[in-house]
Image (cartoon, protein in one colour):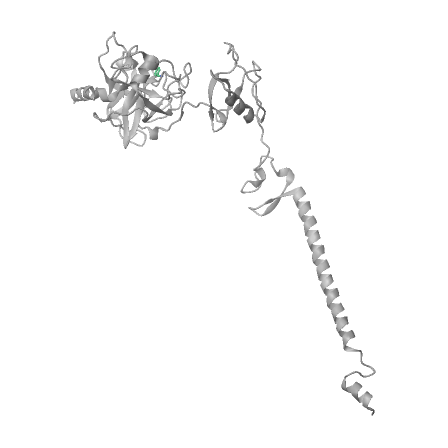
Length: 401
Ligand code: 4AZ
């Protein structure tokens, strides 16, 4: 054995053995092919998944609850297929066309909650109002506008609008009220017809206005309806006596207060409860928030409301009330209430009902009495001040003990 072959053996490189580096590269190759195959398979799976996703998105909507696929033609078809309504949410909406415009120059508004159209009536329309109106219709350019004569044959009722948060809003004079919120409110009915509102101030007593009885003098024809926010239906209570504060022909608006004694007392419940009288020594300051409620006309020449309405007003100081509109007719025993810009007011059919102050507990501070028109600016509603008649109320009730 020569030295060279001995060292070849020692190094493990015999004539039938491959070199070590060639074996390593082969196993590298095998691993490489395996990795490539795995990567290619994964890529294929991702591509297939992607294609399946595109296909499903084109033909189905994915419902989360219950987990299912809804064919696209069942989406926005008016029938709920997904429990959470995903298939009927965000659908195109149908918007009904308004009535054909009589005068094509008059701006019309649709009140969403009543779905009724009105034409916009505004004495001092401004560029800001015009711009807001156009923006609400999707236009951004500066509009031109002009006032038009409102003819008698107007096909739509006029409604006043105000600018609120950048958009035109129809002035909403009131909102529907639940009797449980105002359980002292009653309807005074003559021959089954609603004439006035009133307030329960004790189990058998209703406070109202004297002028309700002017053309309706037969006591047996009067009935009182308590515990309901609707005018029709429900039982009524008979009237035993009516007490009026003395009204003189010289000042017919004075002493517009009456007490009605019921034949049977109303029992307290969630929908029938008496209201407190005001404190004799508490004079409210102008600007105090007050509430009015009733079934009266919802606009000046309108009609009674079947459902009780509520509206917030504020106490207006007597001096400015007299100066602005009433030339001294508002006496110390009356209160003015409304909003300086008008729009919220009582009207025919609300008479006799309460003007309410929420001073810790609800108090009837006034009785709906008179006013020029309904809701016009500068002619607020005028109310009998109940505080001025506390002695009269006690005297009447004492006389019936
Ligand atoms: C009425 O005729 C009447 N805007 C009641 C209140 C008002 C006007 C009229 C106040 O019974």
